[in-house]
Image 1 (cartoon, rainbow, N blue to C red):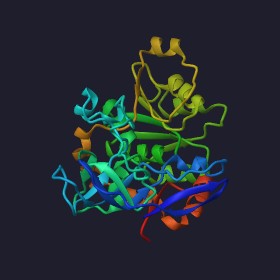
Image 2: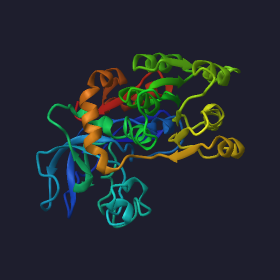
Image 3: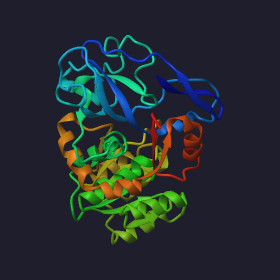
Image 4: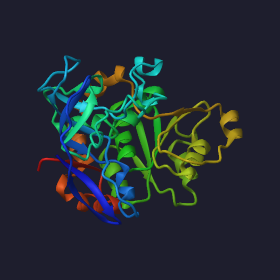
Length: 337
């Protein structure tokens, strides 16, 4: 099979690897859509790798035994390689499994766990059937494109009449706009890049503010009649964005952190005095996949705006170069084009 590889700074292409073989509960999925996430950040760096991607939608083509799916099923490939046995996995919260990507949860075959590839091995219970009405590209948004912010909106019980502030209009933040608008909320986006700010407006954000403005906090308060947003979602991985959310979110409001922040000085006084609730959000529970699929069937027009570019996988270098400019929304690879 063909697999994406990075050969050095700004040098990428395809290499050949053996096709995976179904074993136990690991099924072989032929990938038809590979949504791209933050892997582009390594494109300009030193080093080599041939293991990229964690989002996919495709077709089950081989099973070693009967399972929760069958050959021919169209499926979304859920991320991670959890144990499937701990209390978190059994509750559907496999994304928080403490044994993720540890033996024997990962197949013994090498090079078969990345999604920038033509095939992948994945346990049958992590393959979610795709409704007939959905394309592979649309269904693939059930991973990071919409998944993390879908869970954030659920945890915070976002509803109509809520004002939601979303920081960072990369693909995850843009997906957050779709999720919040779907629930009827008023969305304020925080973004400095012109292309992404404009795309947020197209997807339904009522206002976009620039975090580089010195009075950005005052702008947000003015947009909420001095009250502050009811709920906030951090998608930029910027410490300043967390500080902004804590500063402007109204008393007894809620904040979800998604952006992979490494270090941030938490304003404990503000959190305590305002009675804020902070949620750590990674991915949604398997229990919520029917609701996710139902939403995707209802926002297909927005997804056509959200997915701004589709590349044949052989054009990985061009795709990563585009992502580095940020002049894009969600970008998708087609492994077979």
